[in-house]
Image 1 (cartoon, rainbow, N blue to C red):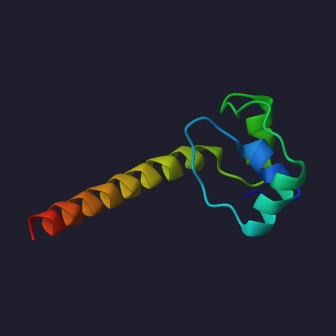
Image 2 (cartoon, rainbow, N blue to C red):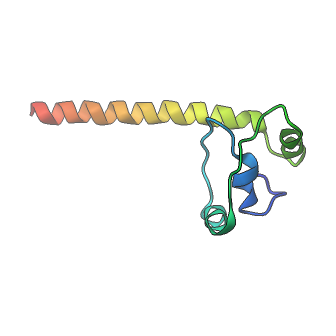
Image 3 (cartoon, helix red, strand yellow):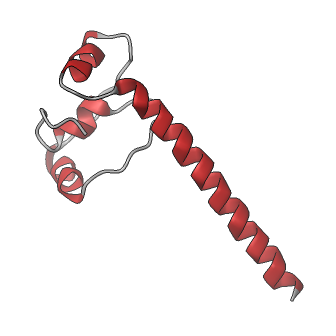
Length: 89
């Protein structure tokens, strides 16, 4: 999250295609009350530059997505393995 932005604006300003990130409850509630996403952040825009300048690592958003996908796939594989084991018992 970018500390220079108001709570709900973090989600609007940092929405980027294919990214996943944790959201503090305060930010989520603020966004739910008044936030909208009208597009997604492109890494090569003035907006992305401004977000970087404010202290956020735009490139790390994609790294977070990749880490989430790996963890999600590992969780699904674990669930499937347990399901197969329980079914065989």
